[in-house]
Length: 159
Image (cartoon, rainbow, N blue to C red; front, side, top):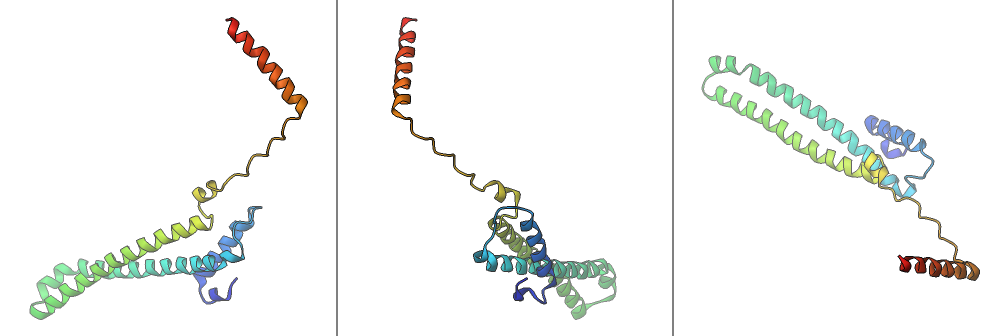
């Protein structure tokens, strides 16, 4: 595992998962030239996990404020009520912003998964090996082919 991933538990687990997946195929899917991309992919995976945790905490805070809103409205007045409204709005805005960030990072992860052949579609898009070239006909085979064509072409004319 690259040194950059030490201290990044989620990224390190992502690295191990990728290495196990690559180890299951005979082909060389990634090379040393791809390692920085793979490390960045693992770090990005960890960042998405962190954003998910932040979103979950923000959503919990919004729910807590929203669930208690009826009580707050009855008991709080003036400036304190305005502060409660602002806190509720900020919690909601945080959830929406985090949703957008997570969506963009997940889209980026999908692009990188495709680049690293970690999706079925990416693996299906691998170019198949080319057909073997046919050996050229020797002069005798060419002559026999020409005779066969001549004979067969005459049969079609009689019909």
